[in-house]
Image (cartoon, rainbow, N blue to C red):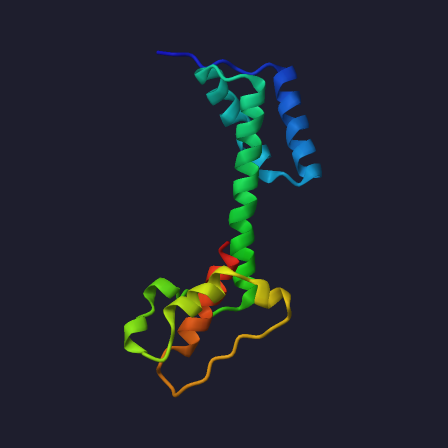
Length: 139
């Protein structure tokens, strides 16, 4: 049977202080992972700089993930419709290359241009525009 080491009162105070600082700095991922990543760093023999790098990388990745979710919610896009799901062969009047270019470059947005789609019902206008929108916010 292995015993788990009970943290000292000083260690508990330091953990509380770190959590308090993380709340003040708005770094919830650091607050939630600093102990786990510290133990992993010790186990793997990483130095303090590698530990700090792993901790900050985790915070950045989580912020990026939440940013994508937030932008999708703010865009009020319909259910996830991606360009990968769209059947370009079914609609001959739609240039796949042109649509993909719109989805990859947001310069037209920065210039204040709109993206409009015209056509009869049922040809995929909403799917295409939602796919472009999702591609732009997922970056």
